[in-house]
Image 1: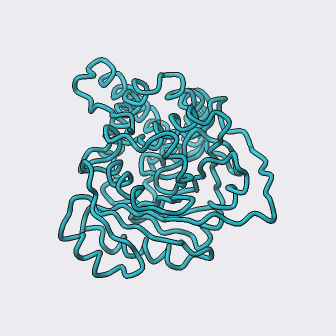
Image 2: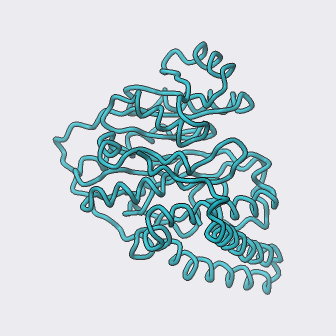
Length: 337
């Protein structure tokens, strides 16, 4: 599961000693994109960054191996630096390309199908007044194409790249941020390397976890550093209609299991799966019992959600086992170097 809690279980709150006289860090905002089908969404994402209460110092749009989209974006976004991904196709390579162009203190990443709250940058940057903060991440709120499917459990909103039930409700230390809305000090990449090209989305591949592997690697490089989840910083993350379907749900869970197996091979099972253990043993059983109680009280959709949790967990475990037992079929990780 794409879980973000700290290694001690579910996240513990962190008090920040904010220095009133500290100058806010400068910020580069990165938006990676790959398909002209998402053009309107991309335009909305760029516009939401252009109208922040704390202005971005630079906006970088990275186009992933799509020359027609690259030309269109360069003609449309006068406020942004538009560059082509010069690494392997996929989100990790696109983000690494952006890092070579980013020149500011903090690098913020948002997805091209996300719309930032007007105070996103302000709230993501505030914790950096504490020097031990290496990165921050915000909440990704699902914006469904219609109503949320009745069978879709909120505990599995990570399937569509969003915050989910079980995450902290206040600013807290986490293992890794959500990829749709995250930031790191630029110096963090100088210390720990960049994102691993063997992980992350590429084309139709549903794998992910490059931000998880990088975050673990970063905190090993800087043991006294922390990453924070800041739920007050948020984006609305649009859910494609195809991702609201059962077939995608099961496929994405399976791909997450494969991704976690790769992360485990890169950084060890303890760091890769410690947060997932708390999620599986605490959050999911409670959710299943709640669904059963709802069904017994007449809300039959509760039983559907409980069944979806069981199926999602099984698909994730199957993907993990398949990738672990057949490593030759998994994509290799380059360690982000």
